[in-house]
Length: 143
View (tube, rainbow, N blue to C red):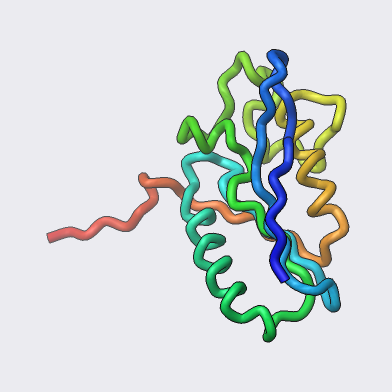
């Protein structure tokens, strides 16, 4: 079983909704694992990992027990800007969403976003937050 749900993480003061997609796999019979990627917008490898995992899970639905909740883009603000942090005018208190968990539904922009995702992650048996080092941490090859 697979379900993809488009959710609103938070709203900007203008009313613009910040959205992401939450994928749920499995039948609920067994443990629940929550996995998210791109909490920092420069760290895109995790999003690709979840894209590839999506294809594998769809191909092996009958072999899967439990529930996997996957969020390929946890922070669309930084993802769209290819940045680790949000611009100061959007969240001058918590520019880094990774410092806001489990969030606050009445807090800053990132606190509200984290609180929305915590509704999916909070009851999981395990939480995996995929990070990478960005392009500067890629191995180089010397000649």
